[in-house]
Length: 461
Image (cartoon, rainbow, N blue to C red; front, side, top):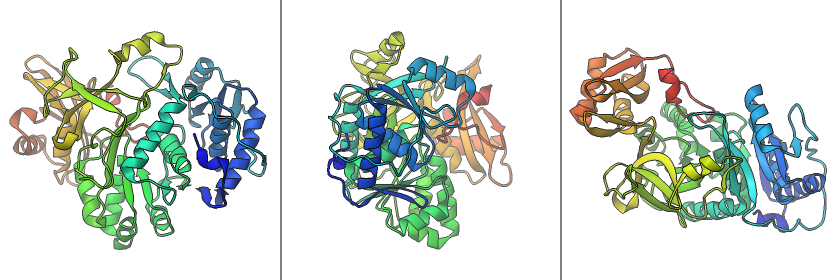
């Protein structure tokens, strides 16, 4: 999975603040962890943003074990569920650790034999609409093929240095943001927490790619507009990549104006890794996640599973080597997630020219059926963000006796608060009258999870 560790050199591999490991350091330290793990098949890793986490994960993968990344801020009930469900034989780090990683400990010799490509590499827990989180079994095959497809799309090589501040218990920060650079033979610099000044320093000191989520790019847009030196530093990046949620078209445009860099978007899920991505050399079209990446098939279907025409809203279904093995201990949930071999994502989208996919929201929360129309929440959110009086917004539907569902806009105002009528008229003028919000509710902030995604169910709660 990480072939460059077979003959590691002294180039930098991992940097967290002043802590730096070369590829040779990482290989030696990871082999020491693998030796301590022995025949353990499941290993929980307390996934703090540290080099020790990287060594623990790489060591477990070398040992052929499945890694269960644990959010270090996890609550007692959720932690008990994850540990009870995954039953790890060893825990690395955290308050109940079997052992902690010693970065100075090294082991020489060859790498252990590569594990079966169909064996689990990770068990990543993801929250559903009901019940406790489900453990997603991600095979080594999915990770290897997906990272290679992204490398092709983004022209990603050993010369690249990825900088980010993403948590290491999710696919984005850990698999893409750590294993991605290491598989290429390049480096990852982790900022610890997102800070635009630290990002600028990294991009002027050798970092070439930034991975982030829309909330980070929103802050970055504002800071770049206010600071030409920061904008110039960000403009030095070879690639700015956004994921984990839709990047508002307004922020996409602001960053491009300030820095000369157009952000590349991609689309994935824990169960599928990455499905689509805008190629580095292609049109970086705001509001789209590009076409499917190599090896991944994507189709859009209606509720009955029939293909929809280009330009019509349909649910994204996916198949390919990127797919997970199933949900741990949940055969019924696994079966329900598939239709004729295609994984049902629950995400709604339209296909545009050149196969570009534009996501309009989640089937359960972002597809609003109002007055006989199917309306994507994301389109209305982008329109509202074009209004100078809107800083942040989320759009949902709620039951309506006449319309079936009415459109509700949850707005964080920017400066003087606009009226509900003004915002409704703004949307009607940009889109069409049936897409205007019927209700506007003003908030001081939107509820978000660790990855910056708005938790829309919390709005109605």
